[in-house]
Length: 129
Image (cartoon, rainbow, N blue to C red; front, side):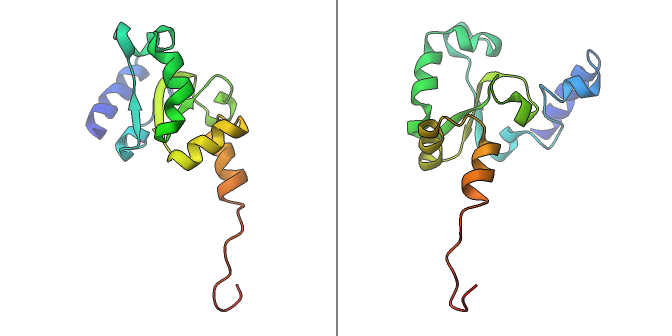
């Protein structure tokens, strides 16, 4: 919930400055989890921070696109997203987009959106524009 995110974000602010907290925690009301399109995985070890080291992670990494998910925040795309690597955070983008991203080797939804969604020519309407 937004109130849970508010408490979490403010707790983090007691430990780190805002510019650091913003690299690992969404501000209240801005979490992808609030959209219903993101989920966190913990795997068999029971901790978010350990998910990358679980036996489940390689399977998730290699197969999540088949179910329409991408690993949203990776080490390779942190310069684009502004978030540190979160291998446990999966975002639903649909099977077509997730598979296309995997096939093209694109790990950032921002990059994919700019290159293949925002700049895809739209069909002309009946008036020619």
